[in-house]
Length: 178
Image 1: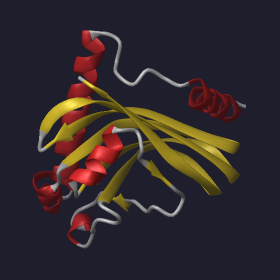
Image 2: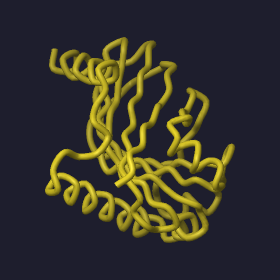
Image 3: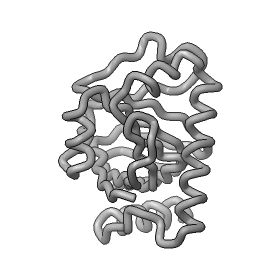
Image 4: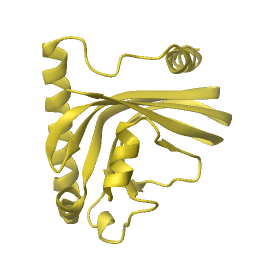
């Protein structure tokens, strides 16, 4: 029952939309601190990932993404966009999926943009992931063999929860300058 309620709430958020930037200065600071902590954690768990941070044109850090499903699924998270290591704005991620799936989980995600075109596309709201995009799980040495696909590289780290799924869906993003 609890999972179904979470799934419905997340699905409703997908269709009603959420405000990209946090509303208050305190919420903005909390999100920035969470994004910085997530970046430090990823670099600590996999020191070889530092090259992605220094060589990319930009990256989006989503400290917490909540995902839930019961047949129909959804996910949502707020993030911070950096261009060459400098905070330039806020972003959010919405995800919808359908298929054989049940559960709920929280995870973090960092998306690196290899090219200026990929970063521009993200900022313009023209950026979305289809079901075939794969993410690399963050662990020691994982990024050493990882590479960009179509100008982006995605890394995730589970936080809590359990999810079983055989579903199709995609992620959409919005951006708001600071």
